[in-house]
Each structure stands twice: as structure tokens, then as C-alpha cells.
Length: 163
Image 1: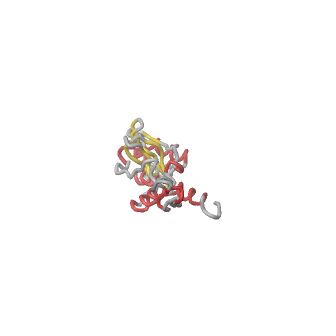
Image 2: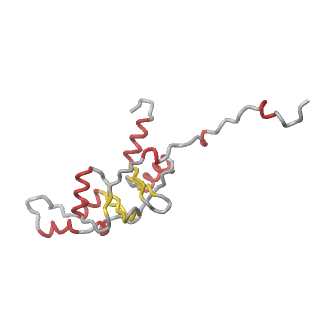
Image 3: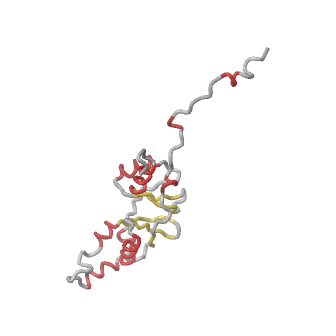
């Protein structure tokens, strides 16, 4: 006769993991590690050139690997004279391109870690009404960026239609 408790586990069904304990996809799986960066002292002319070259909507402002701020294409449009590149362009208009990144960057950053769930990242984008989240380490070093477009691409890849 067996002692109570010795082989009881062989007779018991295995527990089924609740759905909320199933691993959720993380930002690491869909983030871009090719974030385009500028330094605090880079000119807005340089920022404009990078926006035009890479067709991104955000430039991350860094010092070494430390994230300090972010500039959106909308921030740049607000800071630079609308007369740039037109017949009515003046020296004063061109001078707006000499402003520095630190003068227009947003310092209030909403960031995530690479192990943040994609769902949490999506909620942060909506809650804060931002279109991207820089991905940083616990020490504030830049690892990448996740945008609303990255989220949509990931959703479509995993949708039943197979996007």
C-alpha cells in the first residue's frame, strides 16, 4: 500500500494556465532599432535633412546613448519659417534653420522598456496622444523606438487575414 501523498500528483490533472498568464508579445519583438538621432546642438537644417532622407516622423535627441528629448516632424514645421524654399524666402527665414535641436525638442518623454507588452505600449500611445515611444534601458540608454505604425503592422501580421 502506498503512503498518502507520494504518487497523488500522477493521478491529478495538470493545471491549465489562465489566459492572462500566457506570454504577451513585447515591444522588443516589433520595435525598430534603427532610430535616427541628433545631438542637442545639431541645427534644424540638419534635422530637416534627416527627416527628408529617412522619411521618419521622429528624431531622438541623444547625448552618447542617453535619450534627452524628441523632435517630431510637426515640431520642425512649427519652428521653421513657412517661407523656406519659396520665392519670398528671406535671410530671416533661413535663420530659423540655424536654431538648435534643444530649442524645439520635447523634454517630457513617455518611454517604454523593451520587455513592455505591446498592449501596454498601445495603451500609452493612446493615453498620452503620442505617435511613438522611445525604448530605453533602466539607465535611460536608447535601444530603439516603437510607433503606432509598428503596432498596426504587428497586428496585421497576426490577424486572421494574414496581412
